[in-house]
Image (cartoon, rainbow, N blue to C red; front, side):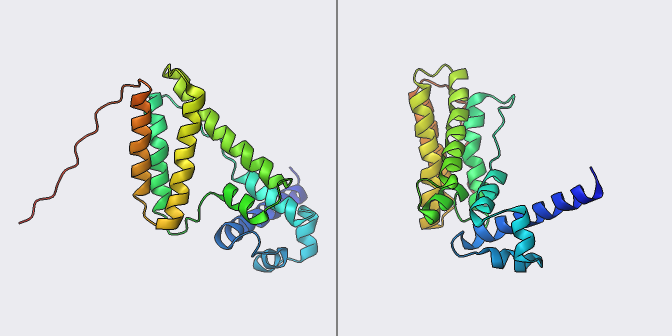
Length: 199
């Protein structure tokens, strides 16, 4: 990689990192390319050299957040339920503003926008992750149950935004456990919660 290519890649990443923080924290509609350029200390022309339009920048921002979940060596049921533990950690973050993909679709409001395609792909990738794990558990209707689990995730995120109570992740996890048990999955017993004694 030449020095010029490295500098270009570094600037692109700086623009994306700034766009990510501002789009997610303030909203896509509320943040213009002028604000992003000013925040970085570059001209709009420099920004447009990397991203020809705001739509292109929005698409790159979402693609940057499109991380595929790996399937690990952990038991499939533990991986499924671990999803809700991750949600609980996300909900505890004061900067949590919901799902960036859903936010983008809601804010842009154009069915033909690239953001919609990326959001659909992201949600489907998450559902297929659930389905693969359910198939490993020999669940009879992994297709339907994977959608139900994905809906639990999305419902928990929406509820958190309204109630601002991180405990909704625990409620969603309990619902996921119930769905798995109803599907014939044998789950390890939960450890009892220790109660503190009053002196």
